[in-house]
Amino acid sequence: MLHLQTFGELRLTDGLGAPIRYPVKALVMLAYLYCSPDHQRSRQELARFLWNESGDHLSDLNLRKLISRIRETTTPFEEEILNFGPPFVRLNKNAISVDLDILRTEKPPVARLGAVSDLVQRGFIPGLSASTKAIDGWIERERQLQVLTLRDIFIKAADHIRDDEERRLLRRSGLQLLETFPGDEQIRSILRGTADDHSQRRLQATGSVAIASGRIAEQQDGTLPQIMPATPAPRLVLLPPGAPALTQQATIADALIEDVTIELCALRNISVVAPHTAEQIRRDSDKAAIVERHSISYLLDTRLSGEGLYAQLIYFPTDEILWAARFEMAVETLPTQRRLIAHKLADAVSGQLKRNESIRLRNEADPQAYHSYLVGAGFLTKFSLPDIRRARKYFKRSLQFYPDYAPAFTGLSRTFTSEWLLTTQGDPALLKLAEDQALRAIETDLESAAGHRELGVTKLYQGAVDESVAALELAEGLSPHYADVIYSHADTLVHASRPQDALEKIKKAISLNPIAPDAYLWCAAGASYFLERYEEALAYVDRMKDKAPAYRIAAASYAMIGDRKRAQFYRQRAEALNPAFEVEKWLALVPFKEQWQKELYRDGLFKAGFSRT
Image (cartoon, rainbow, N blue to C red; front, top):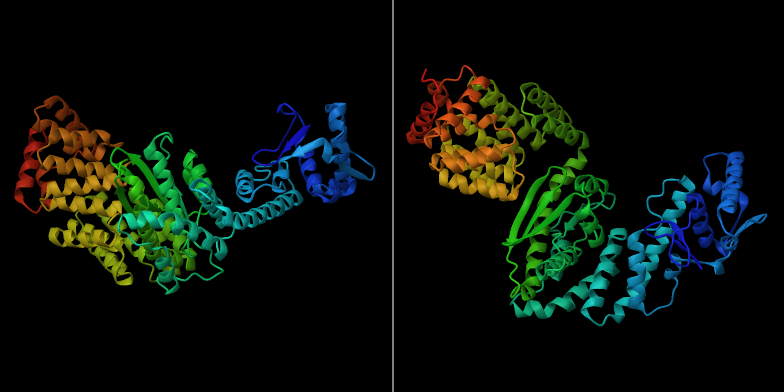
């Protein structure tokens, strides 16, 4: 018997599983006829369905050509599956099997749930290229019916769960359904019930208390921002570590992520992407594109290493790390700690989402302001004077749409400090403008870590090192896992004559942002230099993609370890970029709190051969 596969891939195979060459439209027609009453349709209906944008005459002609191609390429046995009328085209259901039969097969509830869940996950006729509006509409209707069938089976199977494996199947299927029915309280109730039944003994063993019901009560009391029904809930995807699944550690980590997903499903204001889709995203080479395509706002990214499980919550539109933590994954203790860690992760994630959603809703309420801000932020990353001034124009435009838009004020502040750096003229007016904009950002949003960060950076350039440290300590307190804030704090600590503290901070920033920007590495090199760890400073410089900003620190470091040849090489490169550079004039502008730092830097630069005048 021939077999028609419609899920995962549309194809026709013979009794041995070998594919049969069949036109794509003919395969669609087979599936359509199978789903039709009495498995038949008139020729006219089929023609309009398969070519509804071509006009009646061309549609009829195309159908006749398709029938001719089928007759020319099929064997007499294969011809038995279709009868071409007239007036009807009929499918002989007894001559072909179709994977859609699984939806109707009578099995025990749990076995049927597994089969149908797997089928629906693969997708009905995915990625069809030779399509029409009529075909697309039919496929979508069939998919909706299939998910409704899965829902019915899921509810029936919930009363027949006997062991952990079946419970995991029920949970995976429930999460799958919540992608289509995010507000379905019956599904959520069943999921919470299976999670609570399964975890209560483990929680009691570790002295913990189940908190899923408490989190729901908090949400009902208004702890989480209430989103109007017309506004879609933000989507969150929890990416599994992606480690080899053969290790016990990886198996437990994957189960942990599933537990966290279950916990977060208790929150009605968050739409959690099902584990199956999360796994596909993890494997995709272009994660950013697929995340954007699925309108996902938040990612919980996880990685396994010798130090345990590292998790970080990322707000995708701005690539900001909202929260991060590391959990020990000792094989001997983790099985009893798994649910406790899941609760901690779920609490942290839900708390960060709650705090971040007011920002998201504000951005969606003023999309033009947000769009202008994003365009400006894009220009600001290029760090050239023309791009910085273009960025300033867009930040000002953003404020025209929304006069109290705090991110635009922080962006403006950054443009003025960046221009001050690039022009190297020491114009205090630019820093005063930067300070004013940072203060306006803070006044508009007192919890703006970005606003306090810009104020701290500006105060550093103004020479007020202690005020800079205070502002950046506050910024880091408001957003303790915001890597760029931690980097700025580390940079200020270098100038505050606290290089050891600075190095610890910048290492934390790099751990949060492992593919570190050059600025992070430059800061780490500076901190290492002032700790007189010159080889370490050079190792950080060597990791920079563009080493030009660090030519002077590299030249001084090589000079301090006695490598005159390489010191001269980097000095010459630095002088080629800035022939007018004068050590004393430059050191007079650089704000170091204690004199020993200037002396140490002066010593290295002079040993490297930089001019004293």
